[in-house]
Amino acid sequence: MKKLQLSFSSGESEVFVGHSCFFQALEEVFQKAKISSAILVLGQGIANFNPAYLKTIFSQSSFQIPTLVLEDKEEDKNFNTVQKLYEQLYQKVNRHTAIIALGGGVLGDMVGFASATFLRGLPFILVPTTLLSQVDASLGGKNGVNFQAAKNAIGTVRQPLATIIDTAFLESLSERDVKSGYVEMLKHGLIQDAKYWAKLTKIHPNQLAKLHPPDWVELIFRSLEIKAEVVQKDEQEKDLRAILNLGHTLGHYLEAKTNYNLYRHGECVLVGMDFALYFSYRQKKLPLKDWEEAHTFFQKFQLSFLGLEIEKEDFVQKIGLDKKMFDSGLNFIGIDQIGHAFIQKGTAVEDLFSVLEEYRRIPTSFLPEKAN
Image 1 (spheres, rainbow, N blue to C red):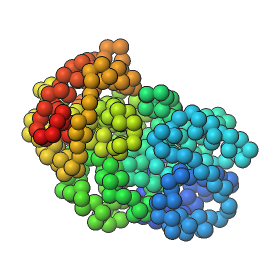
Image 2: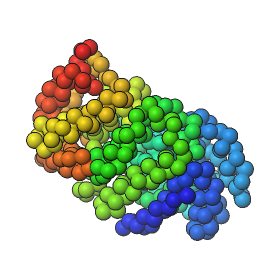
Image 3: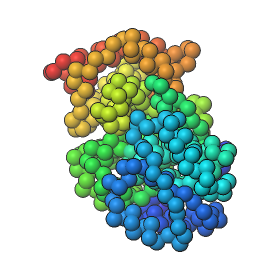
Image 4: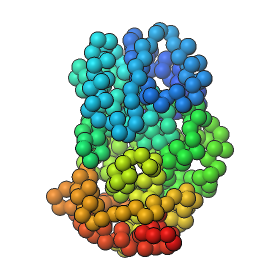
């Protein structure tokens, strides 16, 4: 089991990464923090994530941990769901009760937000069970809910006491969900580590199921190291941390445009990254060969948003709700070479749309206007 000790202005946090490590890591956290009571919050979909392993680890606990179940789909990520959690916590916890969230990124965001705000803050332990949540939402302390059309518009930045990443949960994921999480790992390589990108792109997306547990532990740990390097320098996302949003401006737009139920988050981000790299090239900041290298690999995911209507007025209005939007324009995240990101401040959304129309006419675009 690998460990990553993190230091932030708001406090310390520890990340555990291993295979079948949940119980060992949890016991260590309880002992260090002198935790004697806890509440476990499960996502409704958790039964799909290796139920036999869940039964084994819970039977080993040295004391009973009451369990709550919470809706955890993207459409559930709102105040109504958090209110239900508050109501369940009200009679069950005190200010020293640890809240453990075991599930995907949506669950972690909501339970993290509830633990940060209920009784002005409860100890929080995050146990992400999808690859996407393990390499993305697991580190950095961001939590919250969606508000109207704005994704993650309301929330806080508060570090968990500990994060436990157990790759045994990956064994029951669908191939599609594994690929979706892998996109965020590719993002880490693009923005910060060309060698890591090269290592990841040697693995065909259709071969991810053949990776062994030690391989997953090594790759996930490197992704977390990259994210930690960024977040520890800019916990509150005043500047540098924004590079972790590569591909997310268009990605979030595509998720909202398709009502969060047609495509996975990682699929939308992959298209967003492909466009972000193309826009970087059109801004004369990224060599064409680098976009072509990334685009060629991205095509192995075999994605297409064929026929999706994107109208300028709708695009400008929804992108205007993006958290990277300021009075002077959008903080666009691009790369100027594989392994190095940049932030272009004051980018006009109309300029993005103009290049997007051009991008859609490329024969191998993921957003073709019509069948190629």
